[in-house]
Image (cartoon, rainbow, N blue to C red; front, side):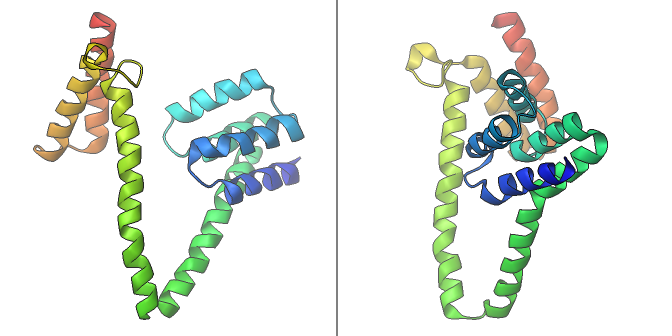
Length: 185
């Protein structure tokens, strides 16, 4: 069982490109279709829990499934297996970078990647902003989510102007946002 946990989540860690949500079909294939460790209802709950807790979805899912299947040792095996491919790849890239970083072609590649990375972050930011600004994620002026807009603006001010710690900002404005939705809805 531990070997299967390791193998399944090593594959998830190795082939999860595109972020956490992109890894969900692979996780589903491994833990529901192939090994039948959980059913689709539990998987839906797992995704909800994995998104609410800090950390990447794949790692949270591996810990949850490992704990459910093999207790604490299962959680450790599955989580380690999920992060091991990233550790190996980063180590290999570090060795390559340290050996060839002075080459002009390497510097050119890194310089050309920076704008693409900024674009990827901007696209993610825009998608998240749409979810915050509009009640259903899309819409016009009549569909604005004023509580989401207000808490976002106040959080931005707290972070940028007053240099508030990110965790403290999330806690304070998360509570304010929840209160706003509870009372004004």
